[in-house]
Amino acid sequence: MSSSASSYLGRPTYFLMALVLLLTVLCITFPAYLRNPADAIGCFTGGIAPPAAADEEEGRRPPELSILVGVHTMAKKHSRRHLIRMAYALQQTPALRGAARVDVRFALCARPMTPEQRAFVALESQAYGDVLLFNCTESAEGGKTYDYFAGLPGMMLGGGGDGDANVRPYDYVMKADDDTYLRLDALVETLRRAPREDMYYGVGLPFMDRKSPPFMLGMGYVLSWDLVQWIATSDMVRSEAKGVEDVTTGNWLNKGNKAKNRVNVYPRMYDYKSAQAKDFLEDTIGVHQLKEDIRWAHTLEHFNATQLDPSKLQETTAF
Figure 1 (cartoon, one colour):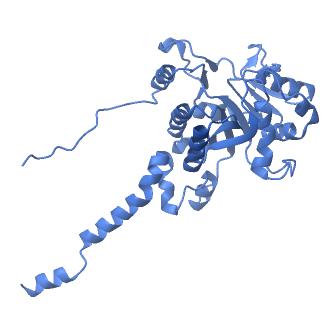
Figure 2 (cartoon, one colour):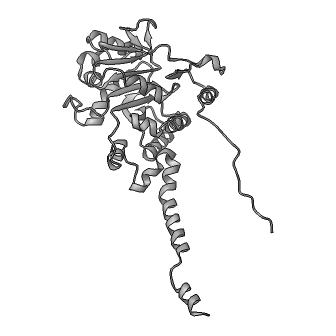
Figure 3 (cartoon, helix red, strand yellow):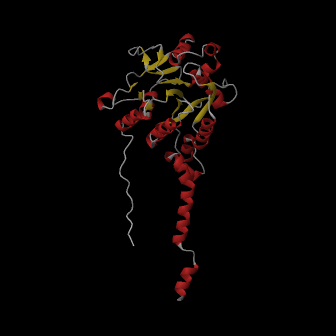
């Protein structure tokens, strides 16, 4: 063997070093990709950093607007949550992240849960970190919306939730149904122009009352953070927690002389009608009544959220 060949074999090859590095990167990032493709890049920093922290690390200013979207659902709807999770993860584009921090979370009551539901919800919570569990009993008119809004300050800030009014983890908090599809960029675009204080946003009834609709429909409505804190500390609201949730929320605000800034986005949020293009508005913020998977499929396809091309498999040579 020549001395040059011997010298070459005695050194670590660059190919082997590159291969080891590639395998290391894949081992770190692939599990995160399975959890959330949009956040896989966070593995390079040892974990998925919050949007604000990521912005600071990259030398950018964090977004000026922050929104918590609480999707109200039930423990048994595991498959529906995963569909919604994917639909919103794909909307977390660089443009959206630059404009606003939009955190989508699932609001569940702790009761009732079968043993298997409790196990599956626990797995989701650990895998995705997007489950908010409230000390309530699941019921259409049993006060879940009160528990949601009243529980958030304590959950986010600690203590009783009645601390410094200047500390706000979010500018706005939304309550949304699990049969509502939101276009997050359109939601952000309208909220950027809305007041940050004493603000109540949604599809108001009556529809044409632009200034002071008495309540917003339950498909999806938004409160500014100061109103969330007020709900958490109001004895009047606590005593009237139960009832038809969208009407009840409006009643709290009306009796408390709150929400002087009301934003009625009708008709940009509406009920699903059909799969025909004419039944979807170009400037849609949200589509409601997606109770069947086929309605989700129609809606996602209309807004170009789904595109499935044939997989390209590498040809192999037969020996």
